[in-house]
Structure formats: C-alpha cells, structure tokens
Image (cartoon, rainbow, N blue to C red; front, side, top):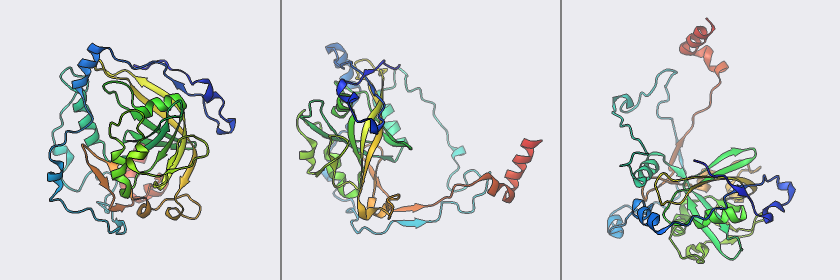
Length: 326
C-alpha cells in the first residue's frame, strides 16, 4: 500500500535550475506509535544480531590478510559451456527440494523474512550515506545495504529504509527534510569505522566523531563526503515512496530515489579519463547475511554476446531461429 506524499518544503524549490532536479514528493506524516502498537511491535523484530562471546569466537580465526595481493583474474567456472547446456558444474540444482514460503503468513515473523533475504541476496554493496538534519545542526553518517545504483544517464541510486520499531532512521528523516546526501563507497581499510557508525547513538551525537573518519567539502549539497572513500557521490532526492508494514506497530518502509549531482574520485584509483576505477584500489566490501562481510580476492570475465555473431556458430541457436521463422 503506497502513501500519498506531500511536496518538499519551500527551501528545496529554490535549488539552482541547472541541476534539473525534479521536485521531490515526501511524506508529511510523523511516525509516532501509540503505546499499545509499540509494545506489540518491539519484540517482533530486531536487525541487530545478538552477540555472545564474540571475542572468544574470533580468537582462533586467521588474521585478515593485509598483503594487498593483486586481485586474481581466473577463467570462468565452465569455459566450454555451450548454449542449452544449463548447469554442468557441481551438484545440479534440479536435484534439490524447494520449500514454498508465504512472507505474509500469520506465523511468519518479520525477522525470519529479514534473515532469509539478507543471507540469500548477497553480496550487497554498502552505501555509506552522509546527511544533515533539517535545521543543519546535526550531521549523520550511516551504512545501508538496501542500496544500489540503478542507472547512469542520469546517474541514479536507490536506498531503502526498513520498517522498524519506533521512529524513522535519522538518515531517512534527514533525506525527507533536506533532500540532500552524499553516497560514499566502502573499502576494506575502513570497514571497522563504517560498521561503528551503525551504533544506536543518541540523537545529536555525530557518527563522524564516533568513526574518526574525515569530512571533506562538497559543492552542490550541504553534507560532507568521506575523504577516505575512493568514490563519493553528491546527490539530491528525486522521489520518495512509503509502504505500510504488514505488522502492526512498525514504522513505514521508505524507498528513496537519488540523482547524482557530482562525483568525487580518488585520482590514483581511476584511469586517465576517469571512466574506470581499479578494483585493486577500490577493494570493495560486500554485505552478506548476519554479521558477515565479504571481500573480493578473485574475478573472472564473461563477454556479452550478440545473436548475429553467435547464431552462425551454434546449432542450437540456428535451430531456434529456423523454428521461429517456420
């Protein structure tokens, strides 16, 4: 169920027209919960995984490899694969049994859906987002894995804010109040600081101070960018959609569409015309299930193919084309 969203406050309308920013639609609805609904929602779901003897758990694990070995480029998993072959390596997925799940079943918790999705849709890029409060007095910095680039012309990004107990996240509220942010990439050498920014600090305490990361100037938005990030994107909100949680007492789920207004790229990480960032310099971190993160140590390449090039070489593609023509 979508909620009707009211126009941005007058300050947003005064932005320079050269940015071609569409007027954003935002909600004007506060997300206050009555006491009975809040009481019902509080035990329903927590995104924070319980930690028991974590230091003891990791004590015997290998140290992180800081050698910065070049990222290895290997062959693809099945270089001799041909059209129509399906899956030939490892166990065949057709031998496995699948369980049907209704995510809205009365006995299905929000937490179960959350844990299933973050462990099954992985890895996910981490959007490290900088915002400021509506009055400009509080700076916020927080990581989000419900995040993705969705187009390049114009450069567009999407970030989502889950339903939760209590009020909306500070980042979400700031985006609604100001319509501005900076999206920063996350590399291996900064992951502890990024993770620390997710702590439930009291309102008014800045994650910049908690993390020790460095603020750097921006040109089209008020929030600072993270100096340590290889790539930072200044952005303005284009649209916001809200959906009501199917569990009573939870805040609304929000989905924010952001248009880039400036890129900041670390010079030694990019090629000459700044059209490509080297993986060995970016060293990206991906969010996995639970508390897990992943790094990239090897890659492989697969070219995109064209029918006109491939059909003459493939009996199957030729057969399919002939059948279509007949």
